Image 1 (cartoon, one colour):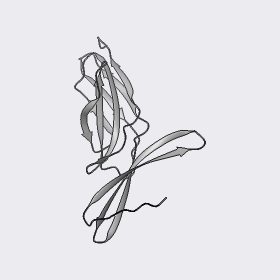
Image 2 (cartoon, helix red, strand yellow):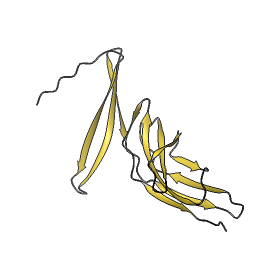
Image 3 (cartoon, one colour):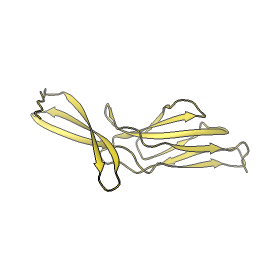
Image 4 (cartoon, helix red, strand yellow):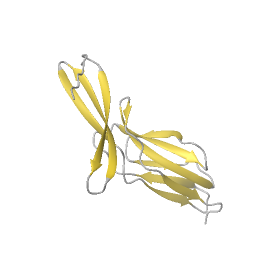
Length: 139
């Protein structure tokens, strides 16, 4: 198979690549971004965040938050956190420069979270989601 690519100075393009782990039989996807500047091709690979974990914080003073952490991704410019409330759809909640986020806009209910790596205008596919449940009463 022949592939021809026209590179324009100052232009950027992205390629999505799927890689299979032959031992775990799983698929991983990452986005590769490339920019041509001064006759130099710069390529950056954005991996999908892994290891998303969450902790529900609910104190007797009704201070509530959902604390999120995940594994840092090499070459990440930042991370986009998405949230769905109850049975609703996911939407962008916030951006974070670090692999942590504290969602303080919560009350009792069910929250679903997922994260994507970002860099400039590019982003990776989203991570697997987690579910956190804020209780009706805090002790």
